[in-house]
Amino acid sequence: MLLYDSQVSGNCYKVRLLLAQLGRQYERHEVDVIDRSNRGELLGALNPALRVPTLVLDDGRALAESNAIIWYLADGTDYLPDDGFARAKVLQWLCFEQYSHEPYIAVARFWLAIARTQPTKSELDAKHAGGYAALAAMERHLSSSRFLVGEQYTIADIALYAYTHVAHEAGFDLAKHPAVAQWLARVASQPRHIPITA
Amino acid sequence: MLLYDSQVSGNCYKVRLLLAQLGRQYERHEVDVIDRSNRGELLGALNPALRVPTLVLDDGRALAESNAIIWYLADGTDYLPDDGFARAKVLQWLCFEQYSHEPYIAVARFWLAIARTQPTKSELDAKHAGGYAALAAMERHLSSSRFLVGEQYTIADIALYAYTHVAHEAGFDLAKHPAVAQWLARVASQPRHIPITA
Image (tube, rainbow over all chains, first blue to last red; front, side, top):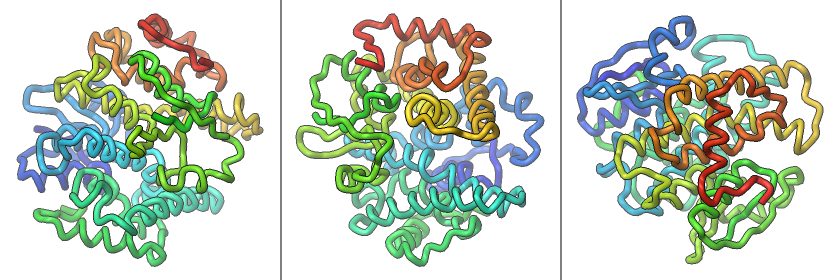
């Protein structure tokens, strides 16, 4: 398999982390996340949204969207439950991540730690408000649950871990989210865990 | 089943449309999408994101996120393929919808047609730029495909139809997207289709 990847992207890290835990081999093609001028040429035939990660299977078929990729790779393994309702709850958290978490925490991190642009105070305040609302939702849930879906580590945890564990790079303070902090440590202690820098 | 619903929400319409096509019975509880002051009381125990749609099954279990709900309801029916890769492609389009389409087209529609707020020109321009990028991605794909995933109508089509077919309410002009326009007509002609107002 070939992964169009970015070392600094949390969305790409979700795929790399799961592949490491599954013990799967793959090649990487590093893609620039700041200069995007060659995206059409590079990804036009593979991913309508022209984003990374994009995964090309050995038979040439391509799959896009980080959460769709990890779902596909996890299906039939311990990282995605068999039960229909439990699977739907995993998907609920994947959707939550893409809609209510990533657009705030990942974008603020991109501004402050990756692209090093200068957002206005009101732009950054809006990202922090949205991101803290997402962290509050996770804190409520994780106060009574070891993992996001029941007692089992799943791709829901991988998806939310990706940007939550680097939220401090986006100016977020997790001190008021003890259940989230404990969950981060629990995720990092899973077998074959790798850091985002790996 | 009980659906916490909003008549004007495209995200809720996805669920209502699929339930109509599946011939499933359910109750509705209309939720205000402008005054959200009672959301914690109403949905706090059911949905960490406090959003509609939220579906409560007959056994009391709750499921949130529109695309997770339609996935759960469609699983095992003609609206979600059995093949693993085709399922992943459906999920790819569901993720695309929530990340690259809904935050632009649905939010602009909410401002202009639902809440009737007064966005600044630069705020609206940003939503139109993002929304047209999503429509361009759909146009490229639908130029050579009858439906979003192969030749079969699936929940990927339901999810993208929801806000694309009301994009004009958000100030979008589909005249330059003929493949999208033809696909909208194809979706609307499916058996047991209902309009968003139903």
